[in-house]
Length: 436
Image (tube, rainbow, N blue to C red; front, side, top):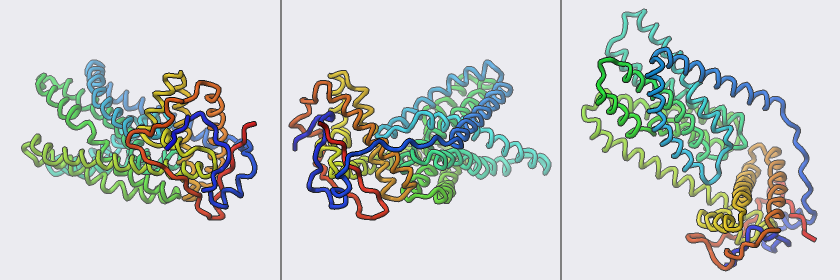
């Protein structure tokens, strides 16, 4: 197979394209109509960040008062360790099609601020109720740990993921995105919670340094992904709803996903109350669960790669890409080779944008095919095609990718062009503008 340069323009549509595509690509692509800026979305985004910002300030004030400034500061530094571990894990999951940084920041702030506020308000109400009915005992403590905390905390974290799905629906393409947003929300929640746990231990005059270190090892090193594993179940189910379209379906699937998330959380909290050998339990139960979660993520990422290849194949059939480019754009090995070549020719930023936009184009095409907000997706498709043409034209004036010719990426396979489903409700792919 001949692998072409990512900068080489496509010209005529191959004859493998179906009649629907060939008939619709007789005219060059015109610039997409400018979509009017939605004041509602802009206001909603501002209000959303104000809410999570105020919630985070309330959490900081609460922890500062309860723990005292010295313990709060040291505990914050300690909590950065598990936070970095979880965020690196989220980055690894999100490598194929990275989500917008603004949405990820909102997810983190929701977890660190809003989710904590919800949990504290409910916990305070329960404490008042328990005190009014005879005070706390072993049964009430167990109830709060095994029933209240899992239900409320997973509900609060899952609500943040659901809000992202409802408001930023175009960036929610499937289970992988749901897991990424859920892990980010959970990372924020665990960060604030770890500050509280570490700070209380540091502020306790009877606690020894050995006990502080032990707590740090248990929460910061052995179980940094606990909250991420719980909430990722909610994100996974919301991601399934994204594959089938419909915001209300996302609400239903969020409730469905909240059930196993709360149950797994309850299982974790309950085991800490009943298991005498925590380390034995950790090796026998928690490590296999973590390995299972990693395997699930790997399989979902492979599905995302196959989907990218499938949808970009539609554009190969319409003449937008050469078949060899699909290897460079839609296989891990091909991307590495393309980025290596681009770095040698000082084009790495351009190549990264080109790969990112091509991947977004494939997922946008999938939204059109499954019928999820099709009108908006078609506008996004036209805008992405225009941007890809500009990126290709800008890099075509630079040295060509001769280093990629004649080789296939390691582990790659030939990707054949595929036609678009011949449903009249799906707008055919437009033809690229010819170069003169």
